[in-house]
Image 1 (spheres, helix red, strand yellow):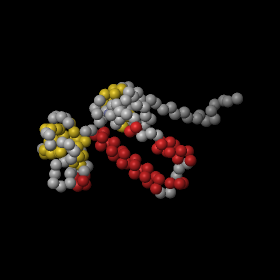
Image 2: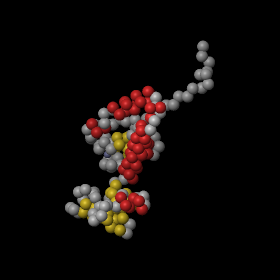
Image 3: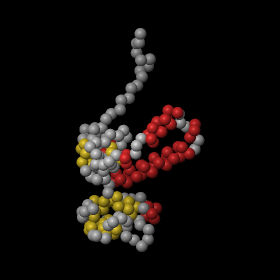
Image 4: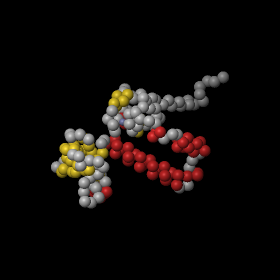
Length: 181
Ligand SMILES: [Zn+2]
């Protein structure tokens, strides 16, 4: 972390029950033991090694390096609980054999963590994977739905990468398929 760097403070614990507002802050000082962060008119102190807020009580704020990081975690929690409940209640009637096969195939894929980073390139269907640090993020959001965007920053390590989005083709039947002999 560097002085002047922009970070975000996400409310946790008691604070998250008061408000979900995320504070945009700046790093004021980076010491051997403590980091000082300027949050509006307040100055907050965090441990340099653990990034935990310095407080006698349970911490109210957590340092985040990008809004994307916060979004990703929300999305993760959301999807996780959706899948959990999808399989919990009456799921035997909900899925077809083919769906279960697809789910099984995805689950059996080697976890991304088995790829050694940095690597030359990554290919993934639903998400972008940073070739430097392995961070996974929403590619569509990263390029802002603009297929001309080629260079983006990793929201975690901040390094630049080139992205080649690909498209999906949807083929729709027209009535009977026209004249066929
Ligand atoms: Zn990265």
